[in-house]
Amino acid sequence: MKKFLESEIPDLPAEECLFHIIPAPYEKTVSYGQGTAQGPGAILEASYQLEAYDGISCPCERGIHTREPKHSLESIEHEVSDVLRLGKLPVILGGEHTVTAAALKALKDSGEEFGIVQFDAHADLRDTYEGEKLSHACVMRRAVDMDIPLFQIGVRSLSVPEVKLRAELGIPYVDGYQIGRHGIPENLLPEGFPEKVYVTFDVDGLDPSIMPSTGTPEPGGLNWFQAMECLEKIVRNKVVIGFDAVELAPIKNLHAPDFLVARLIYNFMGLIARK
Image (cartoon, rainbow, N blue to C red; front, side, top):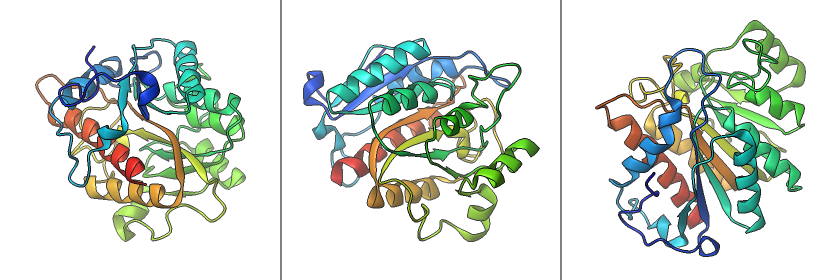
């Protein structure tokens, strides 16, 4: 498996790099389209086409270290813990959304106090799905079970129990419908949300017109500039302690979505590095 932006940057020692890429080709509970196990490799391959200059700066100057792929939730959790021990920022490439649960457990066990910002077409708040409690459809419910504050962006598909749970727990959100009608709120995150945040970006949070390569597409998602505006607002007001990009299911001979995810990751690195 290639390394992120290997075409542009030297292979630096881990301790010299701010960003640690963790490929996580885990795919166990997908329920519609398949192929997320190929997502990390496709992102790394697409990153070869990135320029070091992101239009404003060269985020890679802070150092990007790509680790060996991890295929189980336990190994992903261990790898994130190792990155945190180095004082660096973990960047997980999924795989299905369940990989986020492993990263959250590592962060929680490290003693961090933080909130989660979730980009997604789906709430992922089911208690179980098809008999599984550790599922892509339940990953944010597991976060709630860990008492981690949650904010959701771009959701446009929920079950009735998820709607009720959101209301009962007072989970804040700005859904796809609201963004489509009114744009991105000036104050995106609610007052009092934790200073440190972990960002999980399910690519189906984007509109299928720019992101067809995902297993459970939903119309009405974010466009590119809306996604960037949200990320900019998050970085401006909070401290990002880790992030992931999940649920890319590459389509053969359709390279644009793979490159989009690689670009999104690199642009997000740029926002973080410049702050």
